[in-house]
Image (cartoon, rainbow, N blue to C red; front, top):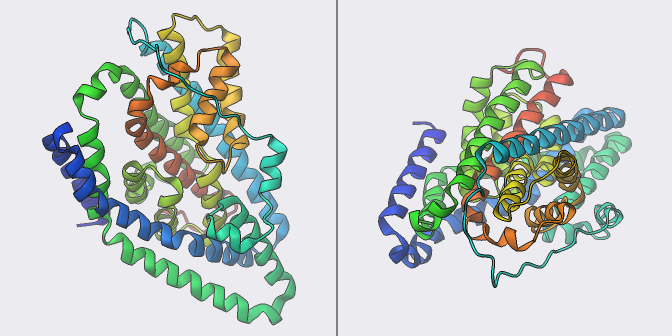
Length: 402
C-alpha cells in the first residue's frame, strides 16, 4: 500500500472519529489525539530549514549560471501571479453564481474586527535581506533563508575548486535531510489522523450548516482550480500527463489539507518532485518561493468571502469593484509575502478597498480552519504545478517526466 492510500485512509478514519466524538468529545480529541498531529508536524518543521538551505545551495551550484537563475525567477513569479489572478476570478464567479450570503440572517452586532495593515512594500523588500542569517534560520524566515542560500550558492560557484569541500558538506547535508524526510513520512498516517480528528470534532454539523454555501463554494472552487488550471498548465506547458501529476503529488496535497501549512509540507513537496524526476536545481528554488508567495487557494477564498460579506449586507458590487478584488488580491499575495496572518490581512485589505464592513469577516472566523484546509492544499498543488512547468521550460530533463 503506497503512502497516498495510507494518508487517505487515515484522513477518512479521522473524519469518522471526529464525527463520533462530536462537540462533547472535542476536548478529549484535542488533549489525547491532537498530540499525534502536533508531534508529526514538529518533526516535519525540524527538517525544513536545513533542507531548504542545503537543497537551494546545491540547486544554484547545479545551475552554475546567474543569468539562468534570474530567468527561472522571472518565470516562477509570473506563473504564480497569473494563477493567483485566475483563482480570484474563479472565487468571484462562484460568489456571484451561488450567492452564499443571499438571504442569510446573521447578526454582526457585538463583532469587532480591527484591520491589521499590511506593511509598506518597501519594508517587505528590505526585510528580505537578513542582517543575521543564523537569526533568519532560527526564526524560519523563509524569504531571508532563500536569499542567503542563493548568495552562498553563487559564492561557491564563483570560488570554484577551493570551495569544493564546502560544496560536498552541504551536498551531504541535503542527502541526510532527504533521508530524514523519508523516515518522518512513514509516520504520516498517524500524524494526519491526529491533525484531522480534533478539527472535525470541534466543527460538527451545528457549526458548519449555517455557512454551508460558503464552504461548498470554497471547496468546489479549489477543486476546479486545481483540476482545470493546474491540469491545463501541466498538460500544455509542462508537456506531462495531468493524471500522473496528481497521482504523484497526492501525498503532499493530502498532508497540506490536514496540516494547513504550506511551509510545513515543504519537505514532502520537495520529495514528491524529486521522485517525479524534476531537476533539484529547479525544485529547490521554485518550491520554497512558492510556499511563501503563492496563495492561489487563499486568493480564491478571498473572492468568495468578499462576495459573501457584500451579500450579507445587501450591497451590490460594480464591475469596477470586481476588478478591485482581483487587482488587490493578486498584488497583496506578493505584498504580504512572509507576513504572519497574511490571509486575514489580504481579506481586510480587500474589504477596505471595497468599502465593506470589516465585521463581516468575523462571521466566517468560526469556520476558518475548515476553509483553510482546501486553500492550503491548492496553494501547495500550485507550487508543484509551477515547478513542473518551469522545469520543462528549462529543458532540465531530456525525456518527458512521465
